[in-house]
Amino acid sequence: MALLPLEEGGEFEVSEQEYNSKRSAKEIRQSLEARQKQIDGDLSALGDRAQRTMDVRQQVMRHPLFFAIAGAVVGFVVVRRPAMFLKAVRRLVSIGTPVIVSALLRSPPPPPPVKSEAPPNDELPLSEEA
Image (cartoon, one colour):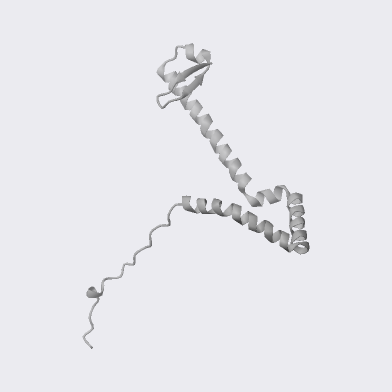
């Protein structure tokens, strides 16, 4: 393998055969386009997989026994030892609060309110029956 320096810094790894081959600019462009299509496909598949992994409904449908057992354990703890459950919830909230706050701070700002198209007061027609 040969390492080629990149303008942005770092290095790009290519095989010795590619490094030593004499290819035309057209062949190089075609090779780059093929690699780009492959990377696009891989990224698309990875995004779909991440979406499926984060979908709670699909996780419950895939692992119903796990969620049934977890629900039974939580129910048992709530009924038998509510103080222990509340302590666990407080810990989760204290751990999760910084994460939630940082996620809220990273979210895009809401769109500005829409202004109404009502005419200003001085343009309202005056009635002559005053």
